[in-house]
Figure 1 (tube, one colour):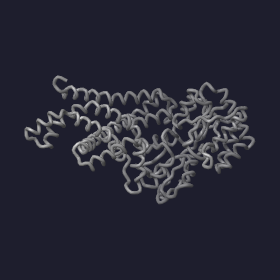
Figure 2 (cartoon, rainbow, N blue to C red; figure 1 turned 180 degrees about the vertical axis):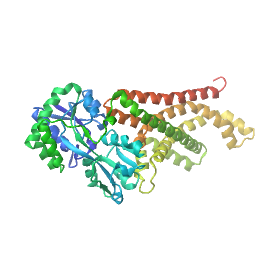
Figure 3 (cartoon, helix red, strand yellow; figure 1 turned 60 degrees about the vertical axis):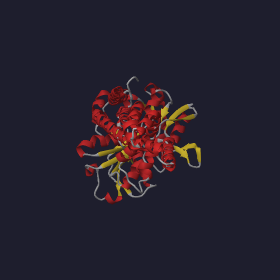
Figure 4 (tube, helix red, strand yellow; figure 1 turned 90 degrees about the horizontal axis):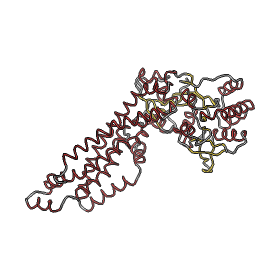
Length: 470
């Protein structure tokens, strides 16, 4: 068997489920995998792996080769066994059709928001131009939402390879692809560093397929053949070397600790966004949670039922789905900025959990103390604010702290809304250097630096507010 890995979420023309038979995969990378397996005398076996984890999955032996629009980069060549390129693409800019006459290059986008996929050559290009052009780089996990946000006005341009841009242009109106490419790259297969002999065999299969015209037939069937591929194949058949990326400074492709130094400012900025977002979200969640808890304890039957419904809906549906609804689902009616949608999504979700903590704390205050307060003539509001509330706060403090730490980590989900928080920035860093060791260690240290002081502060407050004799 030849185990080959890819992510079907990448869609056509790479790898996708056949619309007429979802159990069957189609795409040019599917056909190339079958071609390689056949000429090796093996049966192809598909292994599902998330695109961002393909290199790491191959390195640990989950599959023999990874395909699916994988870009040839210096970092990937240094860490893995990479096949010869089998397709040449262009990194192209897409802008709204109304702006196409005045935006012709990256230089015309100074101070604007440009969208792309994280962990790609396009992202590296934008990162290299971020400071001189004052670009606001928006990172996405798929190639659908960048173009949607471009048309909606949330982004001013999209930089991605022409295969993705033309595919999206066929299904979406309102944007144009600029004719001048920003850079040139190649798709390759990736094998583990220890699989160099198998890589060499695959290279010969690809060269023979180029010579025979088999690859040309595959790409023509998907409407992707052009003169660039003919020139590329001529060079490879003559065994000439091909640069991994043309148009991207090699300084942006540094490796290891050198790359860590280059990414550190971005990681620190992402950590700052994470802590600010978490603190604001938790503050709002606490305020809304207190109101919900009070409504469920003191409200009328209708109010209690309505608030119970809110709590069950928010706890019973995924946070990720709620974020998508807030940012993309209601965009036609209310176009929330990414940070606002992330803040609101986290706060409303955690408010449901917080309300249950506060409700239980309120109900655990001794009824004898409440009766005594009423006998002394205190109003229900005074009973709540002077007697019941403070004691309930003491009971709720420990679980509140746990929820805050959980929210700090759940903030990683907001990257789907283009908010560049710490985990997303780390994932891009790891993808670009082909290793999680250094990025993962730096990310863990930053999270600990944020969470440990907060936990220590909560414990200090808990000791100060502890009831006498407790």
